[in-house]
Structure formats: structure tokens, C-alpha cells
Length: 448
Image 1 (cartoon, one colour):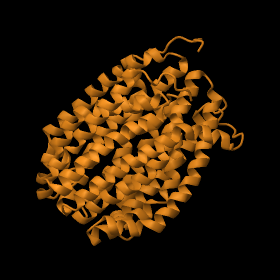
Image 2 (tube, one colour):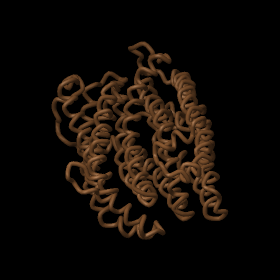
Image 3 (cartoon, helix red, strand yellow):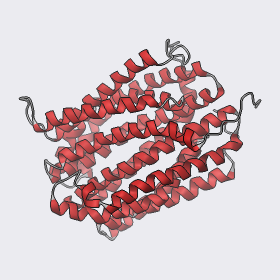
Image 4 (cartoon, rainbow, N blue to C red):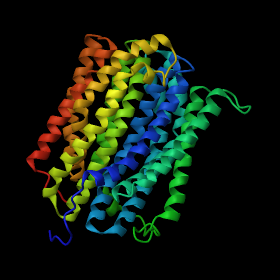
């Protein structure tokens, strides 16, 4: 490849400049789940446990489409790095068309099969019923969430991440207001409980989409990026996008499915264990969003760097991102581990539940020693464009993870804190597999 431009050398300052708006947006998005959990923690343990099952169930469905947007983001970043800016808009519009069709399919399939699935997955009829109520009202938000995911892919892929902050602040404030009104029944409306939390989150996603549309039309150079016109849908173009995106779709669906299985295994240990795990899942989200901000930045910058024609710069870039990721995550993990009860009180005011959650919280924080390199290396592999290999590597790690989960939860029926050591197993497997592939250099010849 002819090198017509200077090799991009992303300093720590530049990495942070791109990552921090993603981080702020993820903080805001995480507060959507935190809001639902916090409201349900004040309604009852059944509702809190049901929101865990239903929330992960919905996320499995959402992440199928989000996986497509991640693949699209990698392509957008590559075209951006090549200077082929108008093609980024073409990829965006094809992605929107595909995801709207996918949303129709997902809503139909979920309406048909979720009662059957929930009845067989969850042993408690009370929790199953509450979870179905949540899923029913959360599904319409899929249309808004899928299109919003493509906007996010465009802005991260072109390294214009500042808009994510504004969008997410708007979204989370909307969700808090809608939840407060609908869960507890304010302004003369009936108190809808867990259904109100689902409706509130769906309305917040609609607000988020409207924001992105208005912002893009008024603030973005639509002509430069080919967003001012859609030249028509072409199946050949979709096929090219799917050659990268199909593996991120499958990877996200499989990854979240194992997370759902984890909670189903926990649910069989009792309602208290499930409630504890829902709290720990939400606290984990605080750490996860920091890591994800740098991991998303890693994927985009790796793809941009290769697009410039400098694959030799990738390894140094990845390790710079790894170092800054460790620093950011470690600060937050130490704070959480030092004041566990204060953090847990965000999600519940039940004294026994607070005390029961502390050991699991400490286990979770220690797991991030392995989770940080696992996710940075994985997103770097995805950023090279070899998403099929990234999927196969994670699939191998997930097989190890699920075998461990089955052993400690179903065979041994260990304490819930011990069950959370499964995060250590997953992180170690991913770090070794993805790190080894990056060091091998076998990704260099991948063309997208």
C-alpha cells in the first residue's frame, strides 16, 4: 500500500480525547440500567431479581443488532482512515435499513416465544411473570435503539465522539423522569412498577434517537460524509458489510446469552442470590463502561491506523491504550472496594441484602485485573477487521467460562460470591487467546 500520509501516532492525550466522550456517554447509558435497578430495589426483591433476568434477556436481543453496528463501525473507521469519507455515510444508511428490518423480526420472534422461554428458564413463577411484563414494554424501544446504535457507530468510527456525551445526558435524564413518573405513579398516573421502568426506558431511547437526528442535521458536515443523500439500497453493499458484521453479531449474541445463562443458574440458587447478582451486575457496569470506552477507542484507532497503511504501529497503540485503561479502571475499582456498602445502597435500601452483596462485590473488583487486557486485546483483534477470528477466540473463552459456571453453580452450588469468580476465568482465557493472536501478527493481511 502506498503511504501518502504520515503514520498516525496516538499519544495518551489523543487517546483520552477520543475515549472520554465515549466514557461519559457510557456513564449516562449505564445510568439507564442503574435507574431501573434503583427503582426496582425500592419496589421489592422479586422485582429487582426479575429486572435482572428481563434486562439481560432484552440485552441479548439488542446486542444482535448492536453487533452489526460494531462491524459497521470497523468499516466506517477503515474508510475514514483511508480518506474515503463519503463511503462512511453509505455504510451508515445501509446499516440503518438492515437494522430496522432486523428489529421487526426480533420483535415478532420475541412476542411469540418469550412466554415459552421464560416459563422454562425461570423456576419462580412470580419472577417469570414480572420479567415478561418488563420485556413486553421494552421491545418497542428496539427500533429506536438499533438506529441509535448506527449513529454511535458513525461518530465513533469517524472519531467524532463528543456528541455521544450530549446524547447520553439527554437520554439518562429522560429515563429518570419517565421512571419516577411511571414506576411510582406521579401526576395522576397509575403506579406501573416494573412495567413503568420498561416504558420509561423505551421512551428515553426515543428521545435519544430524536437528539441524534437533530444534531446530525444541524452540526455534522453531512455532505462530506455522504449523509446528505442516500443513493439507494444495494444488496452487494450489505453483503460486504455483513462479511465483517455477521461475526460481531453472532459474538455479541453468544456472549450475552452466556451472561443470561449465568443469571439463570444463579436464579436456581434462590431469590436472594439473584437479587445480590443483579446488584453486582449493575456495579460491574460502572467498571465495564470505563473499560468499554477505551476498548471502543482501541477498535476504532486500530482500524484507522491500518487504513492509513501502518499496521506496524498497531502493537504500540494497543499497549498505550492498555496502560491508560488499567490506570482508569484501577482507580474506580479501589474506590468501589473501599466503600462497598455506600455503592450498594445506590441499588437497594434493604440492610440484609446490602450485607450479603459485599463479598461478591470484592470478588468482582479483583476480576478486572484480568478483564482489562481481555477486552482491550479482543477489541484490537476486531479492529483489524478479522471479526471471524475474534468471534472464534471469544467462543473458546466462553466455553471454558460456561463449563466453570456449570460446575460451581449446578454441581457444587457454591456461595454467590464464589460464583462470581467465573469472571476471573473468562478474563484469563480471553487475555491469553486474544493477546497471543495479536502478537502472532496473522491479522496483517486482512482486507475489508
